[in-house]
Length: 239
Image 1: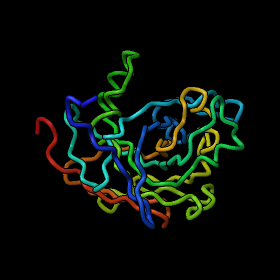
Image 2: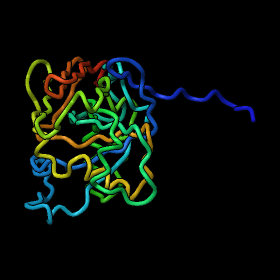
Image 3: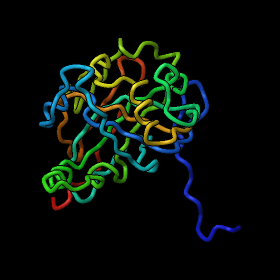
């Protein structure tokens, strides 16, 4: 059968050491650092038994930005940064609920990314108890670094995320402070979705989220393992 329109190209993330990673789907985790949940006015779990279930949302694969150039998005005057660990799956999960002990075997590698958020749209939707997809799943909302193979990253619990904007530290969080770690999140996702090779998981952000303006430069890193640099371009709507 002949396509009646040209097929969109698959987004491919460069892999350190060679090759590329074709992206299938992007899953995102909300409120996965207690300090961020607190700053957003959400309940903060005090024990593992009190965690409940993670909050999930999605972004389209074509929201990924690889060159760091992020046009200021339409429809908002309050664009916010959220630095996150990005997990890349290199294997399909078995059918059914994924065993936590097996979850790590699915991981191909890691990157650092930004979950960009139109905060004013999110706040308006939340105030009316409406879905807030428009605040998360927009064009250029997922800048991502190159991928580093899992074996080259080592123990995530010893790693930390840091975001600087115009040279000023805005966010810093140890991955040991995640409410749900990577295997636990993959287990919870498997209860809702068929996880496949090519999936990305944005793992949630630490406290310190804040605005990005046209002309701002950002520098996000997972310690000295991998770095994402970029700039917000264009003009703010109505400016």
